[in-house]
Length: 263
Image (cartoon, rainbow, N blue to C red; front, top):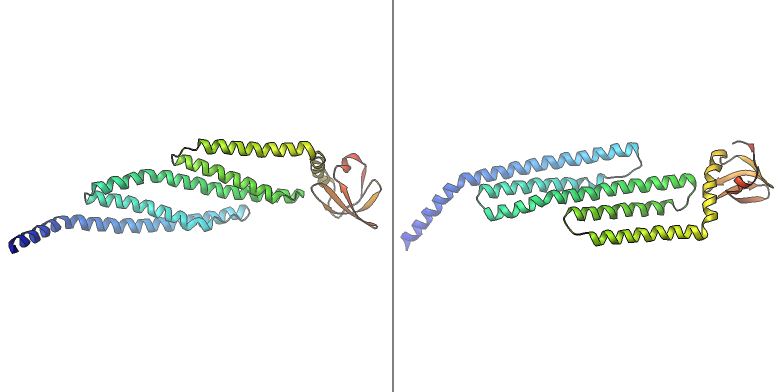
């Protein structure tokens, strides 16, 4: 009994001594891979934050800096996964190596899908801010809502593309999205066709009013004479001695208007 235990211990010792170089090499690879992953994560986070500063210098505040740690962590685990594959291969753990390789092969699709959604979120936020800014400049009061709707449509489209990138069937989602967008556009066109003709005329006319007059100008249109207080999307507010008049913007195309004094 003692001899058998002794032989078993000697056998384990010999196997351990044979495996020791591979274990030391695996430990070295693990440490090296971990340090490399940390460096890459640090550089990616710095790159995203630098990109955020560059974007904000040229455009409105978009703030992609808050996503930097998540992007860096994604690259960190991608490198660590490659490290684990190398370690299991060095140790001869074929089953684990094959399983990790399957995950590793699929990882680029996951990263690509993540990048697609991330870019769509940044681009959608930028488009929403742009639409809201333009709407404010022309006096359109629903600019923020229109910008948000556009932003969500961009993100939703990106999610569908990302799901397709992962190899998941998205035909039904694409059909539903097409139906939804068609219904939205049809409802908008129907609303304009039925009851928004006058509003559209005023909105278009307000563009020309802004080119000719500015807020603070003294004008006369028809029987109204006063100072322009505000030019909205559909009406021009004029302060007079008797009160404030709300003149439809299209009236400036239909009636004679006079600039008495420029601001």
